Length: 107
Length: 107
DNA sequence: ACTATATTTGCCATATATTGGCAAGTGTAA
DNA sequence: TTACACTTGCCAATATATGGCAAATATAGT
Image (cartoon, rainbow over all chains, first blue to last red; front, side, top):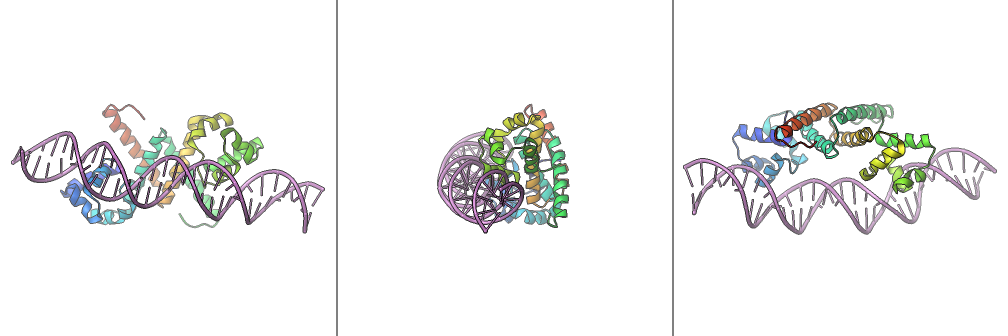
């Protein structure tokens, strides 16, 4: 398990591409790729589906990795212990059951 | 388990206060409390410690509830399944061990 | 129906955070 | 010292979030 940036760098190296080449298919400039790999900026969500295709990976799983990265950042920003993720999971389940009861299907 | 807003409302009701009275000690106006309880705005983080005191609750636990709420919102925004929270926990542990090795104590 | 109280919502100006990109910097190897 | 890959600082443009007023909507008592 690694951060999203580290994951991207590893995938890029697997393909033997430099940052310019790797960014090309998504219209992302080299310096941005650098920042993304180093966790200073986020990979644009609008390009995530294209990324999944480019890497030949499952979109949902890639998205989980992507979003998890954001969650971890948020949790660390507030200096929370890891139990916050369990709490979040409980709250999410609660919300889903609540919305289900109210007939709001989406989620 | 409930959302942070629902939790606040329940605590407020326990105390038998209206939204104006409840917001008073934190300098938060009634309409804001309403929005917070209904999840349209966030309770200001800068007031969270005061809130813990006011409610006679443990600050860290309250913070977990508070941050978990944000995480859930983020996860739902991207329509992620709940496994994203497990993925996040793994990534968090990974990050901590990595930072530990590099001698960055904080977290 | 009328009043009073409590709450919710819409709107908007302000503050805060995030993005994308250029220019300048570091590092490394030929 | 040149070439290449990468990193960082800075800044303008964009997007998000916040706080508060005014208006709308309950809800309950008379």
